[in-house]
Length: 153
Image (tube, rainbow, N blue to C red; front, side, top):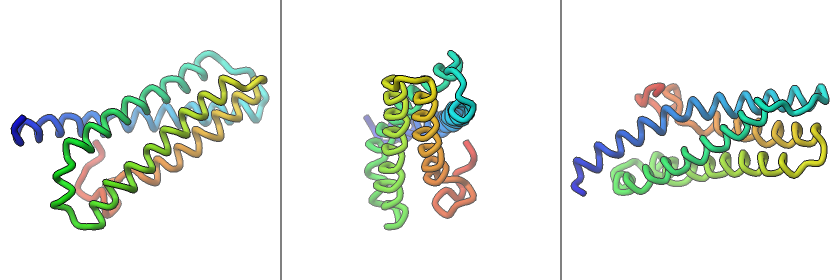
């Protein structure tokens, strides 16, 4: 594949990667907050809560595939970056987002194994909200130095 076609394809992947971020933020936040509320009120796990937690995990895994595809498509671009930018994209963003996806997956799997409804809520709440905080801290927002000029989408 020539470089122009690769750039077009990586631009499309980047657009969907950026767009999917919003779906992940919303589903992880809703699942985490709903589980926290359910845990504090000792309520049952309602089917929509379970569905949102599953959707959050699925979207995270799709995002991981898109992210890995972008990582390998743009690997040569790292050579042209300043060292702090290269470090961020190659290690910090990638590493932290893999950790975030692992936390969401572990939270969902642990909730399936919990014996009580309150235990299910507790596991989703802890893992999903921790993942949400790490995600918010690691996304290259337009108001940060690393995300400057990137836009909100």
